[in-house]
Length: 562
Image (cartoon, rainbow, N blue to C red; front, side, top):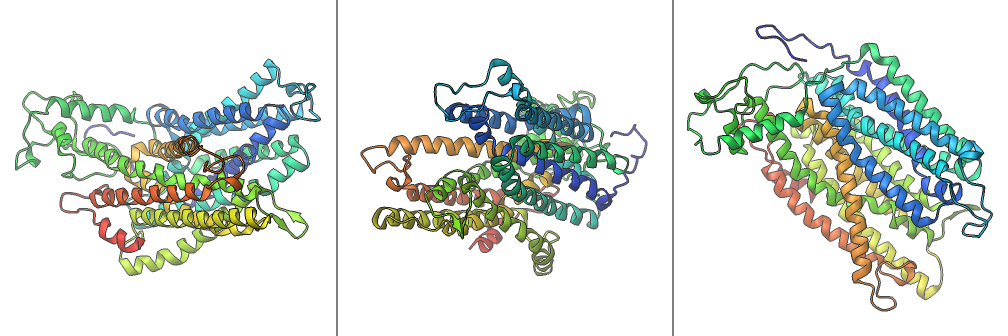
């Protein structure tokens, strides 16, 4: 929203927590629907659509990659064209339609192949072209939905609080924690109850329940429309970035004067959303874009940019190195959804007469995260505020660094447990209790509560307010990078260690491999990454800090992480 020259910007009425029942309700039911539908898809494709394992995994990998990258396009459309409210609302409808299409593939007999008594037999036929096309239609709608929901959900929630008031800033801090609390609650319900219904009762019912949850999500979102803060789009943020780079390049031969302020183009702000930023001395070559010369015109933004525009680009450049460190950190996190599950399959999972599904052990990670967040929000943060005198208790970079340290510990514990499991399987011919995996899952959940939430909050708070949707897509891009890097590591390690019998670290039979070495390798990678992260933290300047306020997280972070 821009104001005309000489007119005062209209004030925005932030409803804060009054809008949260609708937004958090929307997010909770959306996650119940999305996770409930997608967490068991590999089983659905192989048992209902009679796909071979390789084909099913290939399809899901391509779909997951597309889903993780789609928020970039959604963020662009949100910031440049439609705004977060319209983008998020349209994406919710697209997700519901996609889930409804997926439910039809299970409920309508003509939309999936005949049931196979034995997968791989000659009488077992795969999906027809029309059946596969309808399935891909449902997948495509889910990609559209994810592309709009992921970059907008947190940003739209943060828009409801006034960042210029203490209560608004504290509200944003609590909103991030409670958002993730509802997310993990939805994950636990989906990974247990919904997955059980899909496997043991009916796929049509098991997919229909998530679809109904998504319908509730849409209802919650649109019911609260009258009280939302709806920020109008202001054009592509990427255009502004390009303008600063081009203008700075054109003035690359200018020398920065000692008295810089009188020469800067720094008009009053016309954006009621963005907080006015002070000039910083980092990336001084970009500052040249805001130096006004005799040949410059304020109309031509490709030659002259204002200080606010330059500082917004600097905010983006500062976040990128921190974001890169999150990719390697998340490699440790994603192992709990892959090889940790394969470990569980080789262990004794019985609890009395009930055998726990191997995929359900991720519930322990989610449970730890869910229990920790309210404790952190209601007990740890108030104590930390009093102890440090800082509004957020500990800084976001300190939280991220602590999460990395715990991730390293989780990899060490995972390696030790796997080493003991392998010895018992080979020498004593007995299966180790799968509950020995619980500590590594709990450590990973605690690491996510600090590191992952710290990442998300950093992106939203340190990006310019008009680029929050882009910030929302960064985390998912980082997770995509972590998944691809993890896959590359598996391929390289499998190839490099595949010598004689027993030499391969990652064989099909883990009893004859050395998965513990793989875990230790990841732990070392995260340790090296932590050193890189500490260097970035020492260099980092928080948004809004000027020349006389330099970030001092490096020393404090080391003390926190030890």
